[in-house]
Length: 144
Image (tube, rainbow, N blue to C red):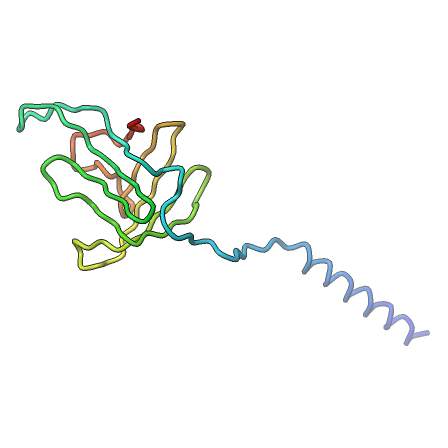
């Protein structure tokens, strides 16, 4: 009788343990990084025109995403250029793009693009707003 109870107790413990293993969520992804740039952000994007008093004219910031390269440029400054890009989705309508920056001797840089709504995105370069040190807003409109 004692032996039978211990076998039943062992079987019950093993069955409960296997149920716990199969019901725990798994965060494993087979392939989370993709080659190139996401199709949702490809194309040319521009900010609204801003009057720059030191240049005495209106200008806009641009963002151009091609299949394997990304360029974010402003007036009178060197653009942030990434080549050999790869990306992954980091949230609902948010993408992280990594690539080699030739201006920094090929150092890997990161851009995060958040799609606010259709035809409107925000860009963050290495964690900070892409236009943080300029007069331009961080809202880019799709240039059709």
